[in-house]
Length: 439
Image (tube, rainbow, N blue to C red):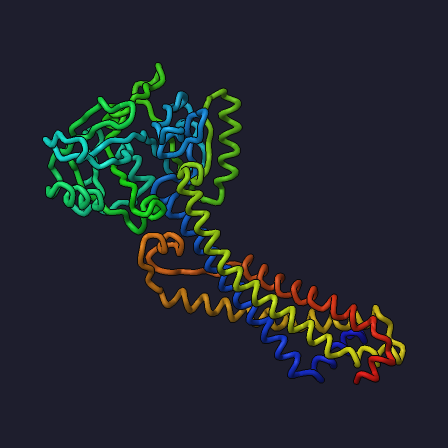
């Protein structure tokens, strides 16, 4: 064992109480960072899974436009408008199906309508709703996210609508009419398609299985219903491509491994450019539009609070180590008086700091991982749609990743090494005789 390491370890043993105190603070800092990192990771995972499993898929393909396009339509100054139809739909669909990474594919047409009780001619009573026009079989394979409260799912080729339980309750509260499966409702187009109208049959009342991220991010102000694609097209003013018999606005792809999304999107966009198809692929954040950004902003605020607590812990670590070095000014002066060089003393204290921070940080990280494991086993229930989205569902299930442990350990070690630089420099500037006299 090198002489420098022997001296450093001996010093730590002789100052056992101070070493343990500094180590305890470092351990607490590592614990906070690991536990906080697990919560942040759970939040990121929960938001992504909520959108990809319920609405957006892992890959979102839409026609290029002069404004941002999302599943909710085309962003414009006057409000959202229906997104243009995909001009190369069949070619894109065939290519996506040929990719081995693809697990499921669904097509969608989005439009907007006021939902009203059949026979009620007062348009002011209609409830503004985003309509997702779908092909039932393929959509259900990609997004099996609905639980039928009453009625049944849409069938291929039939007209109809699936209303959410929240929208049915809102209509009941507004009009005093309870809608059931088999009842008729009137759909009135909105915006430029105000003259469009359609009467359809309620096939079922549904609730989202687990979490509706759009409802959570909008604070309950957004209603979504599912209709057959023909009904959705009839309530749009945008015409389809001349060659398209049944045009679609979006293709949504679920991957076997969501981690492949970035590579898949890059390859797909390259193929679209080569084939001169005026469309582009994006991820779930693009598909969710502003809601993905809102969810990200809330997650960032949530993470900032955790990181603020961790920052305070690191500051305490740095202060404790700085004080420990300052208290050794006389010892450092004595060592210099008997011939120890400045570089030797710097390296000795660095080895001591490194040993304390690695051991204590490792113990703290292990305790943090254990705490996260206990929280996971406790299966703490989460109430409220927004907390559920931020904490990955109705049950809080944090998971420690190797990267969060490594990051936490690296952070406390770097903070500890950084903390001893300035006080060591100050102590070395003190003349040996004055340092000994101070003792």
